Length: 217
Image 1 (tube, one colour):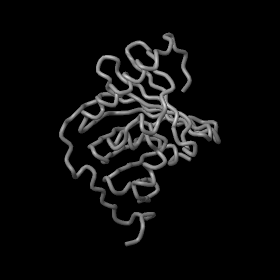
Image 2: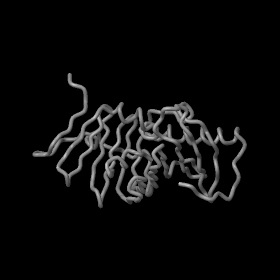
Image 3: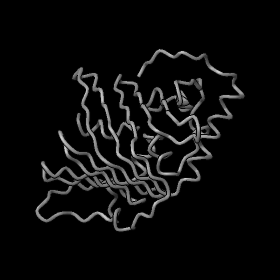
Image 4: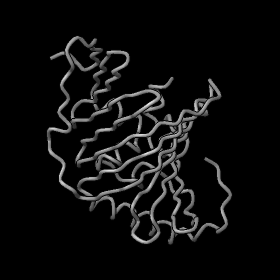
């Protein structure tokens, strides 16, 4: 269940400001999209809280992320469950050092079921795949609430948080239809700094078991 939580992205709050008119909400979402479209690379630290309904437990992990558009990401999860998640635009690699195991899968299998990941990787448009429910304000933050347009989507809701001054995304929460939810808050965000291609080239450590789910040539 811990590993599944990593793929959810990416909560219910009391809001002090009412929802805006639909036209204003759409304008805000478009501004968030436009700002993120201008981001070529992103580096940040993050804190993730993953609630697993079956276990009735919330797991908190912290780490760092590097994103290079289009489609390249590296998520490093620290304790209590160290993992490295790398997208090289073609495949997704999940390395669990404590288990001495690597999982490899085609990136399409993740993006097709996790649209927030697609958006973060710079390969998706929010309004193409989500309906805008409302846009709220909380202090200096815009909070945009979405539901998926696809009825068969595994997600039930997406919440994006963005800086009110520059529309920079600062966090997200993903809810699925099983009652699980995962929220991520970004800190120490650095935009458009150079990231070497080598960051996204994963080399399988010697002696590590590989589970390969990519199609055979």
